[in-house]
Image 1 (cartoon, rainbow, N blue to C red):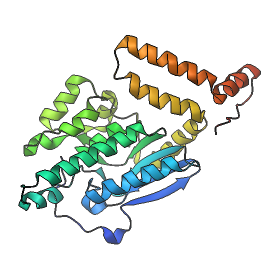
Image 2: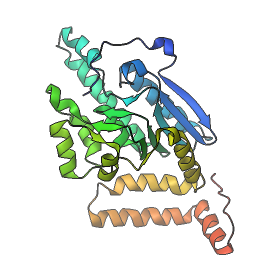
Image 3: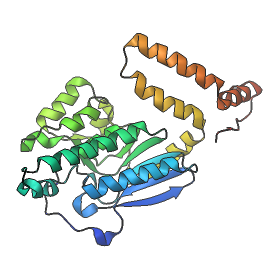
Length: 276
C-alpha cells in the first residue's frame, strides 16, 4: 500500500537508510531515502527495526523520534519493489506476505517499546507512511503535510494501515479516508486525532526538541508503566481495564520513582528520579 509509483531511485549514495542523531536523552532516527520518498522498503524497515532496538537497549536514550529527510515523510511501501516479484514462481505471494508481515512487526515493535516514540512529520505521509504516524505514541507535524490511505485508488485496500488508523481516528472518519483515498490536511489530521500538534515548518525540530525535553523530565518508570498500560487497557472492556489499571497503579506506587516523586511534591522540591 503506497503512493510510491516512480522508478526506484538508488539512494545509496545518500548514506545509510536511517541517519542517527542524539541530542541529550532524545535519539532521532531520520529516514534517509528522499529520492524514493522514504518508502518502507525492505532496507528501510530493516534499518528502522535495528535502530529502534539499539535505542531501546541504550540507557542514555529516553525518547525516540522518527523523522525524515526530503519533502515527503513516508510514501508507504515501494510498489516497484513489490511488483518486481510478480515474476516469481508463486506470482509474488511469498514476497508480498514477507513485506506485510515485516511491516506489521515493525509497527508492533514501536507500540511495544517501553520508550515513547514521537513522529516528526515534515511532509506528506501516505498509506503505510500514514500507518507509521498513527503507530507512534505522539506526532507533531507541519502545516504543509497531508495524510491519506490511497490504496483503494489502485485496487488495494489499505488493510494494514487501517489497523493503526482505526486506533487513532473515529470510525466514520477512518472509513472515509480508507474508501475515498483522499488526502486530509494537517489541521484536519489534528482534529481527527491522528497528530497532536501542527507547527510552522521552520519550528518543527525546535518544537519536537522542547516536547522531548518536557517529557524527559518526567519519571522514567512512570512513563514506562504509562505506555504499557495505555496500550493494554485500550483493548479491554471497561471492567477489565479498571482491574488492570488498578494493579499497575499499585505496582507503580511501590516503585522508587513514585516514592521520590510524592515525597518531593510534599516537600515542595524538584524530584530526583532514582531510575533516571
